[in-house]
Length: 310
Image (cartoon, rainbow, N blue to C red; front, top):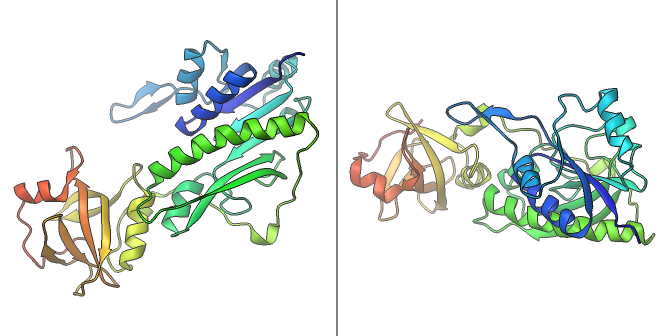
């Protein structure tokens, strides 16, 4: 029996486990990923993680600037794949591309659809204080994460979960579920469950404005923000005009005014007044420095009680 053939489309680290698992179980004809971009402090040209993984596997790589271009669609169609599988590719596929695979065009999405459609479902789920997230394997259509659902699996979001730890959990879960979904389709046993549009919510990309901590919010909202922006882009505050990224902490039972005032210095770090209770900062990053414990920071920096973080 001929081995199932797949064209894989993905870009960031999240998509790498799915690519590796698909390559282990099926024939990946080619990998489509975003073009190399300038990134990082030095703004050097960097290849997407999926391209690096594909080259390690010695798979062909395509990096079109325009996936709707007729010549690109023709190149993909000529490969006659059984499936197209996308995972955090970054663009919506055209009807012409969706029509290419013999069996299905599938997407691996990091939420329990129809909740959290869009670009940042992992960050948004944690920032909104959700107690669970998950993976959806779905048929693609012309909308943004609107296609029929094949499989879903939920995972709990722990109180200390960060976007980074949830990212890794869901990346591995997605890799397993896509193999399960492909097998179900091949055997004619895959359901097609319509999404309930009345329940749809959205997860737009994070904005720069959202990175700054508003200390007049409740301590739990601040905690969710810090967790949801770890390890990227990082929530921040300002101390004496300098930006401090806050990487970890927790709400504590303490009252004080005004919002943003340093209320206490403790063994683990420093306590900051919030709109509802207070927040103990335990891990941070000063400008131009590495991430460190708040205790280590305090050994080199005196913060008088009453200092206002802005």
